Length: 350
Image (cartoon, rainbow, N blue to C red; front, side, top):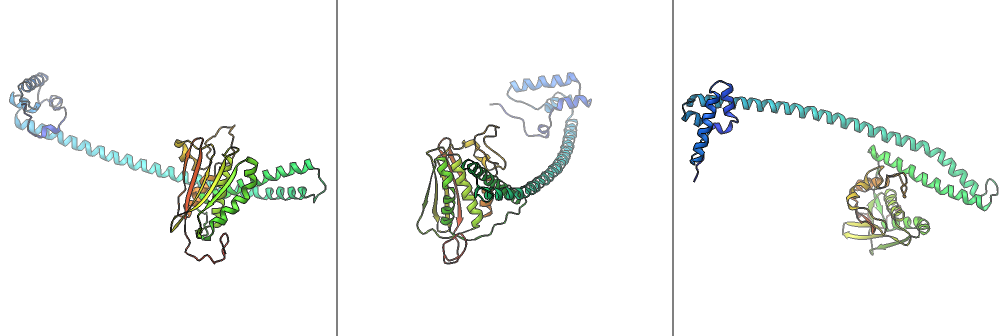
C-alpha cells in the first residue's frame, strides 16, 4: 500500500519550485532533478514533497527549505490581507452605490406618487362638470332629446363613470405609495358588503352574460374591517371575475368560517385563468399580463396591486390559485370582531 507524506508547512505553499528558482535558491536543472526524483519515489510507493526531494538530493538544506516555506507563507498571508481589505473596500463602495440608488428610487417613487395624485385630483374637477351636464341632458333638463341622443348620452355616462373609477384608483394608489392609505377598522357585516357589491354588479354581469352566485355559512359574525375599503376590494375582485369570464360563465362569492377567529372570503370565476408562472406578476402596479397595444381587456393594472395593499393593511394576505382556461380563485381572511352585533355600524347588521 502506498504511503503519504507527513503533514508539513510545505503543503500550504503552491508552486514552491518556481519560487525557489526565482529567488536563486536552486537552478532549473536542480528543479528538474528533484521532480524526476519525486516521480521515482512515487513509483516506488513512497511519495515525497518537492522540498523533501531537494533536501534528500542535497540541493537544499532543511533550514533553507523551512526559511523559503516561511517566507512564502508570510507573502501569502500578506496577499490575503490585502485582498480582504480590497474586498471590504469594494463591498463598502458597492453598498454606498446601492444605498444611493435606493434613495434615488425612493425619490422617484415619491415624485411618481405625487404626480399621479396631483393629476388625478386635477382630472376630478372637469369630470364632475361633465357628469353633471350629462345628467342634465339625459333627464331632459336642458331640452327634449331624441331616443338616439339619449342613448348616446347614456353611453357617455358609462364611460364617464368608468373614468371616475380609474381616477379614484389612481388617487388610492398614490396614497398607498406614500404610506398614507388610512384604514378605519370597525365591526362590519361582510355578508351585507358582498350583497351590496353583487347588486351593483348585476347589470354589468347581465350585459356580459355571466351569472353571479353567493354562498354564506350560517350565522357569520361581524368582522373587523374598513367597510369602504373592503367593499372596494370585493367589488374589484368581482368586476375582474366578470371581465375575464366569457359568456355563459359564472362568478361565485363565498363567505365561510375559517376558524372561530377568522372569516374567509373567496371570489372564484370560470374565466380564462392565469398561467402558473405568471401569477406573481398580477399584483405588480401598472402591469398587464397582456401588454400589447391590441390587448383585449382594459384597465390600468392598478386594481390587484391596491387589493393586495388594502388586504395587507388589514393584517391579512390575499392568495390566488388558477388553472389556465379554467378560471381563478382569490381568497383572503378577516378577523372576527369582538364587538356585539347590536352595535349600529355602517356595513353591518343592526
